[in-house]
Length: 382
Image (cartoon, rainbow, N blue to C red; front, side, top):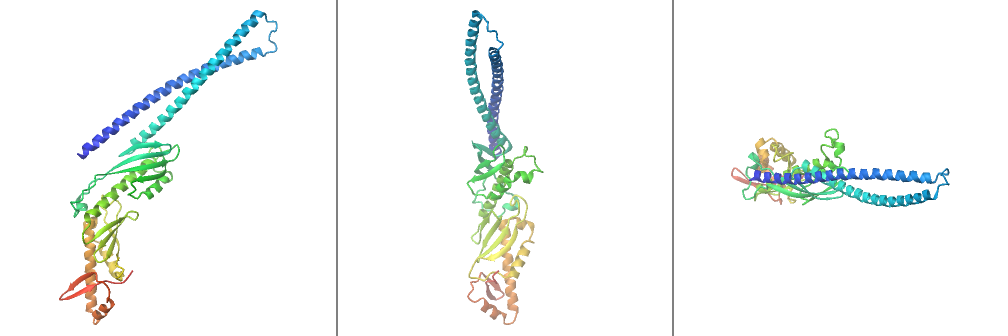
């Protein structure tokens, strides 16, 4: 079904391209024919004007025979009248040729516009030009979202349907005369593309040694990067929605490419998203663990460092899946808390001191050690 949809879309694009090609051929043929006609008319006009100028010089010649008889003078007057009539005809022809020239200029402008639109649609995929006004191009961008498979899609909720495509509009302002990006706006503005736009503005300087400008423009590069960003952002949002549990939930900081996992007990785990995740097999990385509960004093620095080191040393398959990785981080956190509590209980009189230090602090987890229940609020503020 998906392939059939793509084939249908391809056929529509090919039909539209063929139509534009026929229009361009007609315009080119008319342009050549009318240009030749205009050139012939201008040559004839130039010859006629040269002839008139030559005759006027003869009339103004002081050596002109003043003894011309009456019959010759009459013939000369008739010739002058004929020349005046010819001048009027030539002036009329000039006016017509000027109109033809203006028409050709309009056709040439239309031809260049159609040619620019065809170049854009040929160069870019999933794209349609829906508006072209001066230096501004309005593009309809359709981005197909690939399906996530393997370890990446484990533990995902079946109640949430995976998106198959995303639709956006791009309003692109280009530099006059060339297809280089000056400014870009995206609607809806649900994906951060500021860094891509900044890079596209300096495209010539960044890629002049790598890619010839006539082969690959900054507009083509920008659209490709925007589609890549839309794909990754959509899949990451989908992964978080599918992984949300009653025990913890997620939010995505797109500019920083960081996921915040809100765990039980007011603890936040900051997870760095690897480049290309979840499409590429790049593992997630735990950046830090912090307490979002202002009534507690935070997690001890030693425990934090230990949890980070252990979490980032977990098996690759665990760190590829968001839900599995967060569960593992939470498990490591609890284990380290238990170890700290056991260590505190193993020191004489430490339990009384430890209890006094934690007085009034809301415990995050109930921890059972042997027959003695204990509560651990963890900790020192960072």
